[in-house]
Length: 183
Image (cartoon, rainbow, N blue to C red):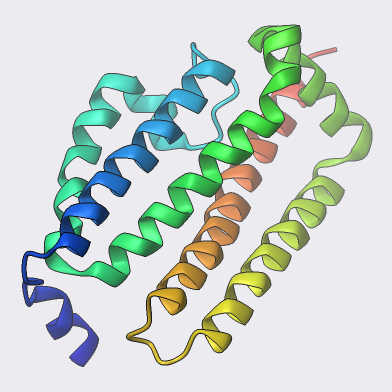
């Protein structure tokens, strides 16, 4: 309960607050830009909310995040780290999608899931997400106390691992369903 009480207290305006607002805008912008570069029609998007709402509505839903540094510097750092890792992951994995096109990439992914099996694909993705989360947990332990900025950055890495685990497992299930329906 004490943690929730901390979130309600406004952070004093400072250079750090302003910098975190700018960093949040940059990180969220890079996440959106990298997503658009890889999958303009969102056929390859793993986040089901993004797939349903589209770019404009999702951008509007993200606008309040720019105020997060006014509420809590640590949570802002968590969101910034998570967003930057997502943008980097999008760009790093985007060459195939851009080269093949969204439709062909999606079909290739469905074939791969069919050949590998949904269970094995889920197990591999889950293991990968947990390893990333473990790296973040290590940063959190090394970055103690909880008030330190590095602790919150470690939490961002944990969140990236967990969100990737959830989003990509949902995408694997969706692809597995599509693979079962196609010849």
